Amino acid sequence: MNYLEDYYNNYDEEGRLLRRHGQVEYLTTMKYIHELLEEDKSRRIIEIGAGTGRYSVTLAKEGYSVTAVELVAHNLEILRGKLDGSEDMESCQGTALDLSAFADESFDLTLLLGPMYHLYNEADKMTALKEAVRVTKPGGHICVAYCMNDSVVVQFAFIQGKIRELLEKNMLTEDFHCLSKPEDLFEMVRVEEIEGLTAGLPVERERLVATDGATGFIRDIVDAMDEETFRLWLEYHMKTCERRDLIGASNHSLDILKKLEKK
Image 1 (cartoon, one colour):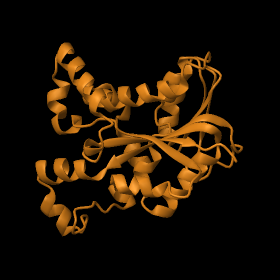
Image 2: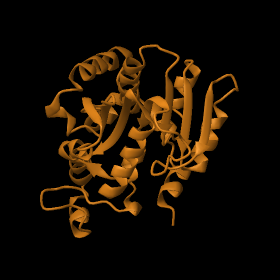
Image 3: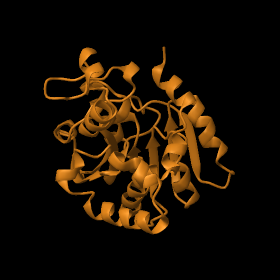
Image 4: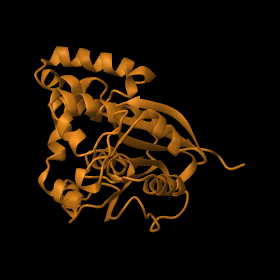
């Protein structure tokens, strides 16, 4: 059974990013993407695991040359339906584990904003990262998104009352690390695991960002905020999202890596 395809065929990922709590993650991610691009429209972008195109289509409509790779056919159909033909954009079905269709050092910015959510062993994670680094030009950037462990433990296990169920199913370690399988859909990590995955790769970490920070803990409150209060929440979040003491508690994080120049 293809758990991932079945999930995305029935889940409104686009709607999640349009709701206020989802906008925090989206706006934060786009802020850092735009900083990396510096409005240089000559820079080529690849998004691996592009989903329904919330990021890649937006960037293409802003005038960037974008290649979108997406595993799930349903998502790819939605993505393509957003295009009017004026965009400099290519899209194809593919996996983060095999980017052999693309030459080495082809892109200035590589976005890996979804695949690491659904890779359950270190070998696959390393393969995806190596492929992303390979297709990126020296001096270019790789942005990698992760689902964070402890926000799930607090929000799902305790706030939603699932702690005993998770323990009975052996889905938590003794130190409360989530254990996931493909049928569980999402893989959770901690900061030290993110940092460990890039050891030995020709990259340097420029920033690690909590893309939604504390938003997940008060998502109903955030969704109900008036415009001014939401503006202030975004201001608070943007000024604190790089604080290391908050990153592990975020629902999502963004690892911003720079590919080292060849010596």
